[in-house]
Structures are given as C-alpha cells and as structure tokens.
Image 1 (cartoon, rainbow, N blue to C red):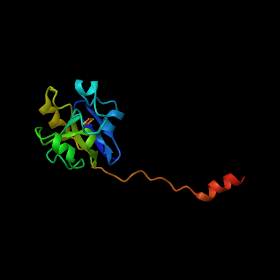
Image 2 (image 1 turned 120 degrees about the horizontal axis):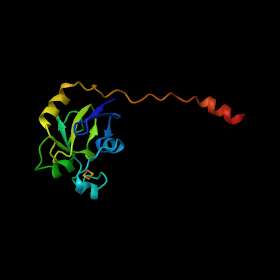
Image 3 (image 1 turned 180 degrees about the horizontal axis):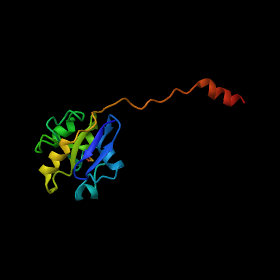
Image 4 (image 1 turned 90 degrees about the horizontal axis):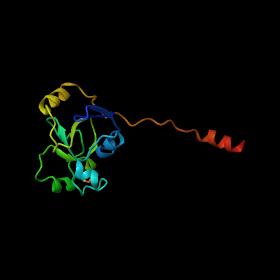
Length: 143
Ligand code: FES
C-alpha cells in the first residue's frame, strides 16, 4: 500500500491506492488547514483553496493523479509542486508538506532527510476479499 509521508508532522501513513489525499489527512487527524480553512472550508469540493500541500520530490505529479481543471484554475499563481489535497488521489507513495504557506524551521534539511529514506513503492493490489460461498449462506437459511 502507498505511504503518505507528512513532512511537517513527521508521520508516515498508509492508504489505499486511489484514496483521496484530503481524506487520508483528516482520517489521521493531520491538520491540513490554516486558520482560514479551519474556520470554514468547502468540504473537499475544490472551491475554498485552503487545502494546499506541497509535493516534495523531483517528479511532483507522478505519485498523485494529475492536476484537475479546478487546480489548473485555482493554483495559477502558486508553485507547480502545490496541489489541493481534496483534488488529488494517491497513486504511489508520496511526501507532502501540509500548509506550505506556513513557515517550517529547517525545511530544506527536513526535505533532504525525508527524501533520503526510501518509501515503499506502492501501489499494491487492493485487499483480496475471499469469495463467499453462496451455498453456505443458503444452507444457513434452510436450517
Ligand atoms: S477543501 Fe476546499 S479546496 Fe480543498
């Protein structure tokens, strides 16, 4: 399974391939929003532009799905590596900096350290669900 390395928080979190990055952060109680977003955000519709993340690494788009039309419009004046977490699906392991507009001490050193550790490649297959034998269910109802 892919791993999302949250640089600011110093946490690695596993997720399913294709999982929404905002959903992963919220599920893990990672603060995605600055004050404005905490006071009010669009709930993941791509309208409030408060769920910025900076994708760390040289090939910034490959671990996530490509930029959406909404992002192309809303992030015109932002760095190329910035994404809206609510618009990005995790395809492979990725390193992200939440709230990149907020200063983080020793950022360059932390980026270098995060990049030096190998993340699991991901994605792997979805979890295998064993087939339920229909005959077993039927026999339970009959007895
Ligand atoms: S949550 Fe509003 S743009 Fe992402």
